[in-house]
Image (cartoon, rainbow, N blue to C red; front, side, top):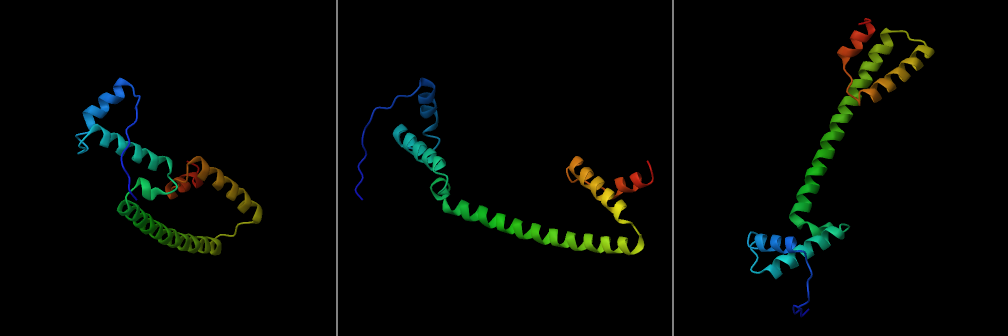
Length: 134
């Protein structure tokens, strides 16, 4: 594909042109035109974010994806272990305490409200203090 550059008029505010003047050499551009072209291509990639490969280099995309995959696997493993421990605690509690259905339903409602109110930051110590009436 034979591409030749074309000249066109560019209208910009003086402050924008001052930024171009100040920054184009910091970005290792040989000219202000090169800097503006890179800026346009970068912004076009941002606007067309469905294809993030235009906006982010492939190495960054694959690195981020690998980190996210690793994080997802770690969180899934931790949640599974937590669920097993919670199930064990529930079975031990159920075996040792006889709780009727009405009390259990009220407790579930109280716990749902407490978890919502505390944004999931529940503490065994707080539950003990509550049960002791403190």
